Image (cartoon, rainbow, N blue to C red; front, top):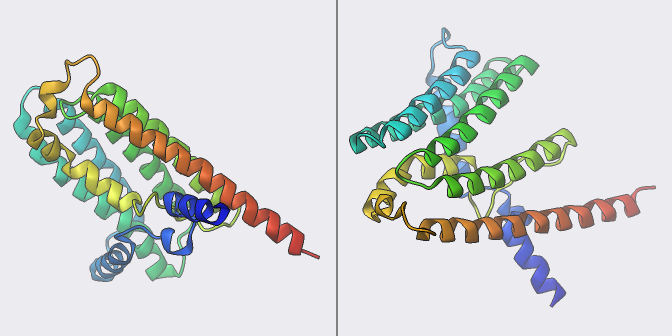
Length: 232
């Protein structure tokens, strides 16, 4: 029973070795490396990071403006494409040119990414495609997981952590395509309900995410304790 529970928590939280990589991690790495190799010398990693943040701003504006004209939803994938390009290629470009990114380049990347995704989640809360309650739940889960990822990185643990195979790339793809999923499901028409079905779904997934997070803490705690016992 204990072994089965351990395996379940590992699968849920990405604690198993195969779970640390998201579904699209390999494709993402290959695409980023190819794009970095194709860019001219005039392109700077700082510029790519800023481009990624500007793409997020454009997508966020389109989301909020879609409350007045739904046709603006087509701009969301374009903005998210810029966001992905800028924040997926900036560090590979720096590593390709100098072997490793500088402290300033790494800080710029993390600042732009830390600004972009929360902005987009909040923008969804003011769009017709998601309720504000659902956006807050998603934002809290994102902040919970991202803070732990940074703690793991700071302590030199593996920084990559995916939730059931969903990492940053998959999350960006979901943010880009959600307006069209919401329109197909006619979710904007349910926003006035006392408890829309989307809120129930998001809250349920949020509870599962928190369970996975505490499962990750449990597994990492056991691993660190085992390492400490083996240390001389």
